[in-house]
Structures are given as structure tokens and as C-alpha cells.
Length: 152
Length: 149
View 1 (cartoon, chains in turn green, cyan):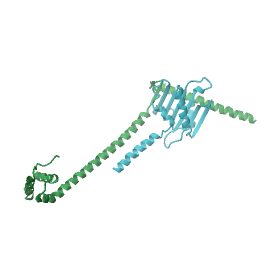
View 2 (spheres, rainbow over the protein chains, first blue to last red; view 1 turned 180 degrees about the vertical axis):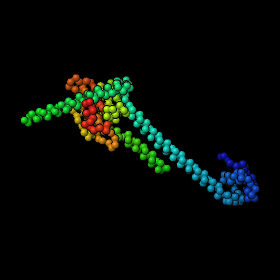
View 3 (cartoon, rainbow over the protein chains, first blue to last red; view 1 turned 60 degrees about the vertical axis):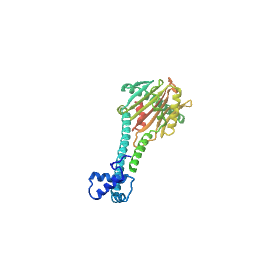
């Protein structure tokens, strides 16, 4: 476990606590003391008193860290969500754009990119459909004429 | 976080719904399998070229292979059953010609399916089955005029 203080034994800690209560510690030493009180397993009347007195600050610090972590998670979550939504949007946009300007034919395994050649095949297919459609219209028309003649 | 999850799910469902709009059976034929086929012709026209002929999408497939032809016919028949309007002609118990107007989707262009089995043509039959899928804001009568141009 990583320790953020240089206090190696109980006596050293008690000495630092006494100096703290006498107002002789530096800011750096105070930080070390708080850290040690939060981390170390030692216990004595003096140490417990110090824990009781300074415990608030240590707990408060942990709460702050927890809140910071929670905020960080939220920010990461929001950033990830935005990235996902943008990704989906970009994919849909790409798909639409990709399909939006196409004029291509695959004839017996050969790719034809020339617009005029492709449109010529389209025209031919449409003519074939029109021919079949016309046959149907002619049939209906002759059927109508036959019924009309029969009714005369 | 819950709100964000809901937004993401909404976006996903919307995009899935948009893709599912084209849920016709014949769309399974347009998965790219015929692009390299030596017995098929697949054409895709969108954008400006399609607009010039009054369409938003033109996608066709012509095949000479018998199995492919049968598959196309069965899928067209399935979609044809869902059509709101159709003109069909059967010859020898097989579908010769079909023009189907599919159910209109809100704000989306109309979808039309043309089918022609030239094997069943009386004059100069050809070993060729053609399927055309069209999307256009034009009505069915305009589409029929369009193919006769």
C-alpha cells in the first residue's frame, strides 16, 4: 500500500500529534499527520483523541474525493454518450450520402460506372416493362371491345 | 445518466426504425450477392440521375439463372401480397408481369415494384427475369407513364 506520509512508528506519530496540539507543525506536517491518522493501524489515547479531533477533516476530505470522482464519472458518461450519438448520426449521414449519389451497374460481374451507359440499361429495362404493360392494356382493350361487340 | 441512456436508446431505435422502413422481402436480394455474378445485372441509380427520371431510387436486378429467377418470383409474390395496388399477368401458372404499388410510408417516397419474366413472352422470349424496385414521390399513373417514355 502506498503511504503519503513518512511516519514509520507509533512514537513518531504521537510526537507529531503533540507538536500539532502545541501549534508547532508546518502545513506539510499537518497533511502528513492527517494522512497517517486515516491510514495507520496504531492506537493510543493520544492518537484516538487526535483522530476524534481531526477525523472530521479526514472524512470530509474523503467525501470531497468521492464527490469529485462522481463528477468525473458523470462527465465521462456524458462525453461517451455524446460520442455514441455523434457516431450514430455520422453513420446514418454517411449511409444516406453514400446512397444519395449513385449511378452504377454490375453487368455479369463487370462494374459499369459510366452514367450514360448505366442509364441506357435502365431505359432498356423500362422499355421491356412498358412492353409487357402495354400487352396487358391491349388485352384489356380487346376484351372490352369483344364484350361491346357481343352486347350489340 | 438515466436521461442520457434514454436519449441513446431513442436514437438507436429511431435509426433502426428508419432502416426497417424498407422491410420488403425483395430487399434481401439487394445485399450485394449479384454484383459479381456472371449471370446477373444489378443497377443502382440515386441522386441527380434518378431525379432526372422522376425517381429518388432505382434499383434493378436481371437474372438468367433459373434458381435466382425462382427466388425473385417468390419474393415478389410475397411482397405483392402486401401491395395496395397491383397489375399482374400470369402465363402458364407463372408470374409474367407485375406492377405493384406498395403501402405508402409517411413522409417517405412511394415504393413500386416491377417484375417481368421474359421467358414467358410470346414474341421472342428471352432467358431473363427482371425486377425493378423504384422509389418516387410520383403516383402510380405517373410511374407507368415514366416507363413508357
